Length: 414
Image (tube, rainbow, N blue to C red):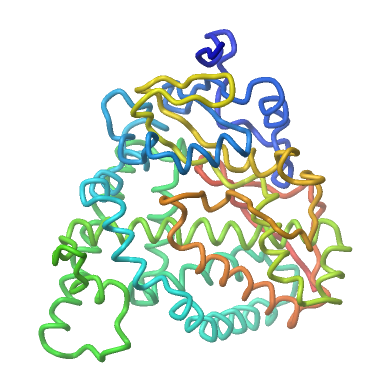
């Protein structure tokens, strides 16, 4: 007989703490086995329903009865207090008003395999230059500051047409937008205003360039293309949606990818045999990137969805009006889907992990993130074959208070 998820006594605080940056919370395995549809308390104090099994998470991400747009409803749970909740931020509300599918259709015209691959030579040149700068000084060095952070921020700023001298400001905004507890609501609100003002001025400048005929066809940045791109109804995105687009791409294209790169290298170097295997067989780079994305436990809170009508997962019914958290990282270690799920297998194939989501709301920029990770790994293997951790893996530290779990630093020597 179907029943509603478990009672008040079973409510746990979420997200769960990791024992160490490269280790998964023990609660994931317990929840998948004993309570796969569970009530949890979010940092805001609101309650939500957490899904941890692969089949349930994949189903929830693809089910039209659960939507991202509904997270702005009055009865939806908030992830964190006030302006710190990016799922109910001005950015999220603006894009929801435009319509997620309409927005995605417009951006999909840019995020093609051809355009992403066209960026690869520039990514390689930037990675080479960053490694030159890092190795010009005596080691050990911090790979986060030396490569993992600056490479993605360079790529996303280049995509948006942001001047190089403004990268540091973008890093600060990205940190704040992803914070759950690190900054106050007033600080978050100030950051939102500053970013909106900056993007508004940037968009105005690009519109002036277009009107003056100073844009070379085929060399447009993404924002310039979006100024004139029309959807199926002949409409273009309003300026407030362009501002929100800049913020959304900053979050997806910078901070998360920087975290992915650093944690990928940390996982590979924490067991030296993995790095040696890649040195011996570079054809494994692509599958190694996918396995790093699957096994990493630091991929954040998960995706939040609002339930518009009763939905059943296994024996449990999640009622209408409930907020669901799709625990993708927990699902990525589900033994019923992945053989030896807790083992990092560099040749794992197929690898249907859920790190980028599933269904119509899967991550728009995943081809870009994958390309950046593959490029960074290829260049590191070629330039620094002797790369190794400069500290024990147990000494690695994560940045506190962010939705994602990036490394504070990654000390390496070569």
